[in-house]
Length: 161
Image (cartoon, rainbow, N blue to C red):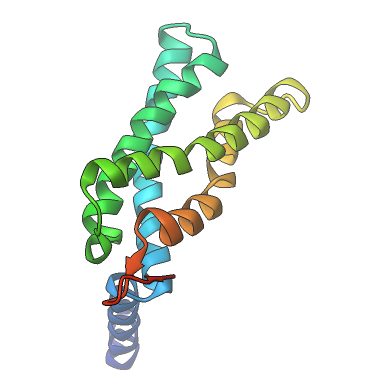
């Protein structure tokens, strides 16, 4: 914290407490923050696999994207199911995983459509292009998974957004 300023220390602790409360709250913004944190952790699964396959095993980059993406998708589903949407698990794990997998197909297309021109037309370095391509699909992933994969049902069986 700050050196010798108790008011600044209290302010920083208060800010951290509010950020923690927001990130753990069941609100849409708290859920978005948790979803983003899970997605960020998935990058640490995705990118090393992509790098190892492409740089070490010499798998073509457009092919290396596929298993890296699949591993990160499984990782992200697991942690979103256990943390981000733990209060909204209405169906079986298999049903939710299937929905998550289907929802993840379009961001894979976005990833490829972003990555390809960045590396072939703009000559952007592969890992940077891959990181940019990862970010492109996050909003889609959150919105559709919030509204469909982990849709909350009311007591009468009607779905709630």
